[in-house]
Amino acid sequence: MNSPAFIIHEVSGLHEVPEGHPERPDRHRAIISDMGDEFAHWTYHKAPKASHDQLELVHHSAYIEQIFDATSNLADLVPLDADTWAGPHSLETALRAAGGACLAVDLVMQEKAPTAFSAMRPPGHHAEPDRAMGFCLFSSAAIAARHAQTVWGLSRVAVVDFDVHHGNGTQAAFWDDASLIYASSHQMPLYPGTGAAHEQGAHNNIFNLPCAPGTSGTQIIKGWRESLLPAIVDAAPDLVIISAGFDAHIDDPLGGLAMQTADFATLTSDIGACVQQIADATGGCRLISLLEGGYNLDALGQSVCAHLRALEAL
Image 1: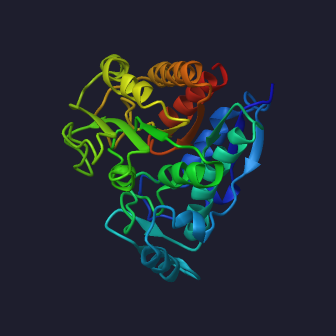
Image 2: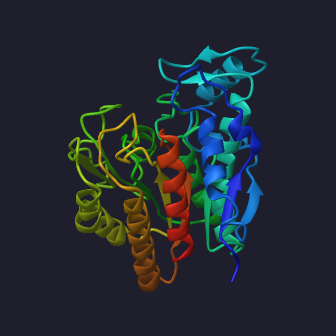
């Protein structure tokens, strides 16, 4: 059996943000440090740059041109919106985050890996088809989903998102497409203000589970088991992509949910069981995972490791 795939690139630790910004290069270093040698048996792959064609699977060409114009040949930091910044390495890093997501799809579809995790920053799930938002330049999970359909001919792809913030960008990209399914648990009220339960997509293909501040990991997992995962099973996608944000951790400075490190392992295992249930029923369903948020460095590193252990145990 092939080993799981871990996708990274050293430029992930170089994408610049202002002093004190939570989505900082130390996130990259915290993950690599906590992993140590424990996952040396995984296969390691350098994230490639996404092509213009891949970006255009989700983003408007005018927006892509705008980002390239704003971020090419930078000597200093520039704001893309109130929260989202770019520096000299940011365009390459964002391209490799989207490209790493597509590589994860390719590796599982080619049966070179049973599953794959891309640990690239910046995150992607807030980037809308026409704008950067919430630390995100390109909507990596949505791009990977469309890449899976375009290159590999998959009919249905689901993104499941347990970041503390709602993935408005993924939702916007999927809203009008019945073949793309999005399920999210997230704190509400909280940035970006989307993700109410009544936001269901044009084809009832969006499933939101808003959680009040203080909601425990046990309660969140219960919501996934009773509501979100059954919806994914019913949708029977060919591929499930995890938007793996670890800022729902009780120690995270940007959120107010109360997940513990072990809860991320439990939820990952539950998602894996859901994928296996679909595969048993349909003959095939694959699983990959992409890093989103997580801003307490200790909690981030520990939670990523718990997530990786659960992925490789599937």
